[in-house]
Image 1 (tube, rainbow, N blue to C red):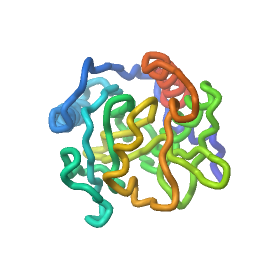
Image 2: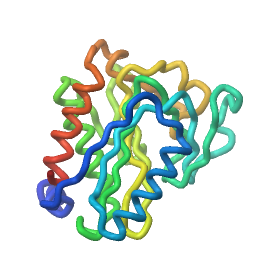
Image 3: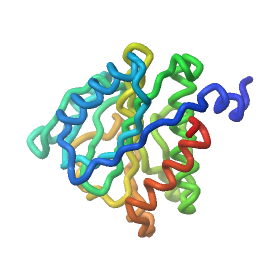
Length: 221
């Protein structure tokens, strides 16, 4: 059995990863085009990149999306995307973190990479006194709310030429009613939550700083 510390050791490199934060709202097709260009460049030797964005309200369909899970196709634009997973919502007040790193330098292990991203999310949430947990049968990071569990963060990645793209999203203070146009990630028996919904008033800048700190611990500088 591989210990968590050993797993993180496989993922970590000494080569600095660039971080960029987009201003305003980034259109989804623009984001995908930029990611694809960056993936090609990283495969040819360019620096790895973590890109932080906010999107206008949209729904995206992963490779496992089921048509029946799109409850209201007219509410917001719907984009099919090559990432793993099912339907998800992106919108204002949600931090989307696109992670473009070279797995050939980080153990060649997609599952370890996903587990590393989950650990980044859980450690970030813990810094704000939120207990986030993973579930083997459900993708994402979950918060216990009495008898139910709500999702606070989603993950969906794709790998091309050994380079990861897409990534994760964390709900800071989005309009949670916007999730009602889909069955988020195909899960009907649980809901969604956010920092604001849990009574926490953290800023996006504070969330970004903690994400960077925890990412560095697991993936390197």
